Image (cartoon, rainbow over all chains, first blue to last red; front, top):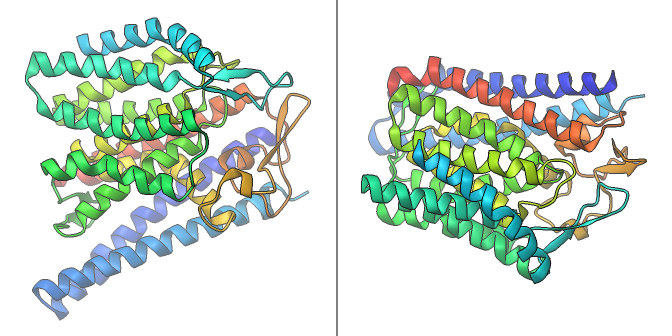
Amino acid sequence: MKLLRNFVAVLGLLAIVWATFLLVSYILASTLFPAIEQASQNILASILRVIAGLATFTAWVLIWYTLTKIWLYEVLLRE
Amino acid sequence: MLEALVSFLTVIAVTPLMIRLGRRAGIVGVDVHKSSKPVIPKTGGLALILGSLIALLIHVLLNHDSLSLIFLSTGLIAGFIGFLEDFRGEMNPKLKPTLLLLASIPILVTGSYVPRPVIPFIGRTRLYKIYPILVALAYPVACNAVNSVDVLNGSMIYTSIPFFAMSSIIAYYRGDSFTLTTSLICISILVALIPYNRYPAKIFPGNSGSLFIGGLMASTAILGRIEVAAIIALLPQIMNEMHVIFSIGGIKSAKQVKSRPVEFVDGFLTASKDRDAPITLVRLLSAGARVGERTMAYMMGVLAAFTSILAILTDLFLVEAWV
């Protein structure tokens, strides 16, 4: 039973990671990117878009790792 | 597909020879998850390389398609780096990812990439400056990710087949015959190695095999223009690699890590409770449980199949509109 529980938990974790990736893309596309586009033009807007994208990607990776640690120590390895 | 059939038959035929070659040349490793600790040849990667080499050369001759040579050369560079490690022993853990950057040279030099990947909701991007850097980084990331799941009999193969099944399906509905052919060749060589690498393994793919397959995955993503789908399909492998690096505090040799992620007790794998132990996929799946090696490898394959389905759904509903 524990094996099945672990399998479903990891499956759920991967689904959450996928969903947050899409959510972050959606938020970037509908808020930050249009704002950058309006505030500045050409090269500055391009640079700001790349920086915003990379910063968001880094934050996503860190959230993913934190979530996995919580998953492992607080859910799966908890007696 | 003639090429896929040829690659399948080549791997089936040459793997027994590779087993003998591995034993004779001393390219062997200990199967640590068996009570008897048998010594197994690590030359399965050479069979994979030979199978795809012959198939892609046939493809080039029949179609006069130079892109296949670029595709193959990226994998060969990565595979050669892996072979060096199999032959000479463990490489400096920081040198390996640096050397793997070299696998991107064929694509970067020939300019065989389109720096405009489609990202869901954002649409077609214009990454003219940053895309070549991402191409170079794709190789160490993909190669090490695949390498990191090659820990159990069959696990690298079971987790890699869903990726190429995903790229085949996307290539099929896009009408991309190049990516479809190369993906089917990759599936064929991996399926052909299953009888030899499944539990109990007669041969390991070795670093040459896992880095070769990782290199081909990165090239499939770039040349097939399925970057986002590839990242999603590789989530289990990337998660495994990234969490190991984070949890041990950087890129380190396995010898520098004191605590092991899983323990092997009475023929079963069980997760370590030590907070200093690396966080791996196998540790997550075996937390508080006792799991057989064969079952664990199948479960890893199912996880890879799940993320590959998510990748297809993402591509179909959120990327294709811009392609």
